[in-house]
Structure formats: structure tokens, C-alpha cells
Length: 289
Image 1 (spheres, rainbow, N blue to C red):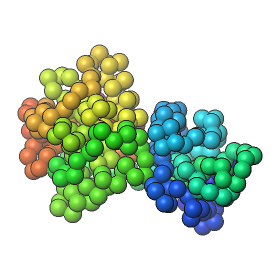
Image 2 (cartoon, rainbow, N blue to C red):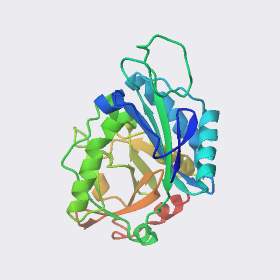
Image 3 (tube, rainbow, N blue to C red):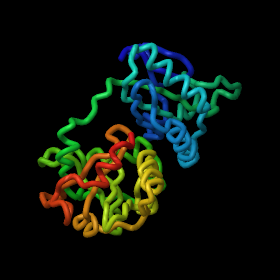
């Protein structure tokens, strides 16, 4: 797509730039949110914005725009590109350590050395996962790299914190799997490489705690809300690998895929009652996206 939003203005993608002195370039000091626009609407955009605001202090950042400004930016990017369906990414970078900031959403007075954040909102064509994958379910392996649940980066969506998962996913795909399950340093299930993990056991829907190294996913929260509203027991818990292997059902979630079944782990079927096929409660949760 030809147009993106950067620091208060719509600019052509080939004219957009981030300073070479930006601390995101030097240190990976950046936050991001990824979400899908469907029919011109972003599911739970306010929750994505709130997560960004909650995460910013961890990296010593300020969020220099309001939810209303973000809503306008989303609408403007979609309108200028002439689309209603898009995969969108909001990136907040720390800006340069020294010198005047080349980009800023809110122009502020201050000394040349003042820290100023930069924001970019991009849109790409939305390519949904194949329908047959939702029927087959993901086949995953257990990653050799561990999620460090003691690090504050495990609880925020930041550029530096995502790299372990992305490398683990590349390794999994190179060996014939769709994804990888990441354990934490204590050997408990944390999450998938870019998604939260859920299991169904005896009618209960369970997902790893944030303290286990799971990202506080927006879709994760929506699934918990929907399940509880439907009268189901849905809880956060410390989840063992054995519990995942022996679950009745399993699925993973993120803002792009929604709810994706997880049916095999290390070539063994998940699901004592359905032998690795997509379960009833997993199908029920598919409406979340």
C-alpha cells in the first residue's frame, strides 16, 4: 500500500523514514501493536492502545497521541489507500538520544537533547490464514529456546522481545512444523511464537498466566471474556507441557489469526477425546477476531 501515517501526517511509503539515530535502530527500543482492519473496523482498538500505554513506561517511553488520534489515523490510512481490509502495524520508537528529533507526533518545545518519540502506522493487504488450516489445526513443536519470564520484556510487545519467538518459528517451519511452543525457564508453557496458548480440559478453558511469560494478548482477553459470558470456566494458570499434550482441545490466539486450533505437538495428536481434530469449544471461540 502506498500511504502510511507517520508523526501526525499521511506520507507515501517511499518517502517515510526513521532517523538513523533513533534508539530503536541502536537498541531495539520500540513498542508495536499489530491488528487487522476488517470492513474498516479494528477489533478492540482501544485495548491495543491501552496495552501500548501500559507498556511504554517499561521502556521509558511516552505515548504522544490519544486514542481518538489513533482512531483517526486508522481511518485515514485505510481511506487514503482505498481499502477496508488490512493488516496494520503501529510502531512507537524512542527517537534519537541526542539532537533534535526529525519526527514527532506532537510538536513540543524543549532543548535539542530532549527525548522525543516517533510513531508510524502502516497497512498491508490482509491475507487471512487458509480456511483449511483452521480445519486441520496447527502442528507445532517445542522450541529449544526458553521464554525468560523474569524479564519485563516478556510482558510487553516490543521489538527486542519478539526476536526469540520469530527465530523459533523459523526453525520450526524449516523442520516441517507450523509453529513452536515456547516454555519458560521453569519448564512451564509460556506461549506460541507469536500467539497465546489455550487448552480445554474437562470443560474448562485454561491459558498460561502473564507471570509465566505470556504476553497479555488482546485476543487472549477477548476469549476469556467470551468464555465467561457463555457460562464457561475460564482461568489463567501455570500450564505444564504434559497438560498441553493431554488436553481435550488446544488453540492459539492473536489479533490476525483470531482463534487457531492446535491439533498436534511434536507429531503427536492433542486431544484425548477428539484425537487431534478441532474440538467443539475451539470452534465456539472462532467468532473472536
